Amino acid sequence: MTNIRIKYGRQEVTQDDIAAVVQVLNSELLTQGPVVPAFEKALCDYTGSNHSIAVNSATSALHIACMALDLGPGDTLWTCPNTFVASSNCAIYCGAMVDFVDMDPKTYNMDIKQLESKLKKAKINNNLPKVLVPVHLSGQSCQMQEIHELSKEYGFKIIEDASHAIGGSYMHSKVGSCQFSDITVFSFHPVKIITTGEGGAALTNNSDLANKLVKLRSHGITADQAEMDIRPEDEIWNYQQVCLGYNYRMTDIAAALGLSQLKRVDLIIKKRNEIASRYNQELADLPLSTPWQHPDTLSSYHLYIIQLNLNKIKKTQPEIYDELRNSGILVNLHYIPVYRQPFYESMGFEAGYCPESEAYHQRALSIPMYSSLSLDDQNYVIETLKKVII
Ligand SMILES: *Cc1c(COP(=O)(O)O)cnc(C)c1O
Image (cartoon, rainbow, N blue to C red; front, side, top):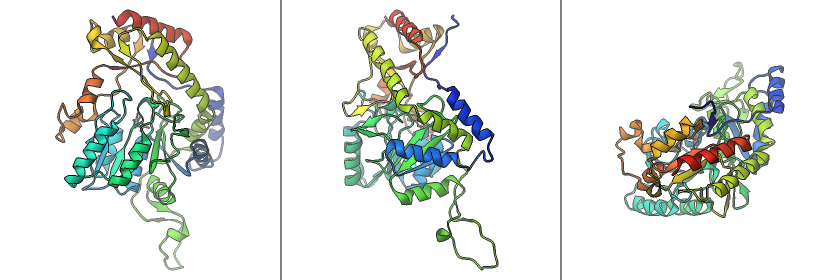
């Protein structure tokens, strides 16, 4: 056992970040003040999207994104099994059903060919999805142009789960531009690229959707006279509830942290890409594959996932996992296919449903990747991998 503890991911908080948060704490408004709108504007400026709605988590953003697109009972949402459970739970929150499209083992993202053939079958069987949630795993964008073409042919809506991917690009646009989707969702959980503590955002270019998202974030309430039902003049109506919403608001405290972090997101992505290229070089001779990059994408490298070539290794994946952890390298696994979770198995999904995702998760490991990972720590990771993976 060792005292070294290098996690697979962690936040980077600077003195400037702390000062920005303290400034809000000393101000009049801790929530619903000026900083959330400033953070939202900065997200729009950065990504090129027209609207951005900051909320208290990406999970909340996914929920209200599904609601804004009218997902409900009788509808189906499709996503990839190789993701965090929130990408599919949002369908269940809305009383809709969920189904899964298997992954491409090269990109770790949804396989476009499998998507196309599943859509063809669904059209014949009259059970096409209403919403598709492509997940930009580890920060590399899915092939959004192809997915967008398919959405026109088969009539589904698109929510990009870009929880891993702020700062990444696809075909020279920033992820979040919503060029090929209805809504894009970011997460600002501390393990992700930039953080607000807990937090997330939904971005869109559609002003009707933006309007719905704003109401859904805050109890379904509006203070806009034009949206209010006119009542007798001797009653005071400052606001009206016009639909069912939630309290998913972000605080100004959190937004101040996010706004401060967003200023250096490009630097963070640059550092993450440098760490990735060093791993690519140093691990090239080991019996594993390093993450392949599609030429249309620039990854934000939320995760650095290796796939073990188990035919050439004398150990099992769990043995390697344990040995690395015992050496202080807190590797992780992203992800066990969502439908293998007991909750989803209780809905009828069975092992074997998406063979590529199942085979992948038995060879994948996420090794440490974060912008403040020191050269010494990265060297320790590389040297330990060389010793353990034999
Ligand atoms: C982290 C994550 C989420 C949920 O983000 P929260 O902000 O923690 O709610 C959703 N989808 C994916 C792919 C994630 O990695």
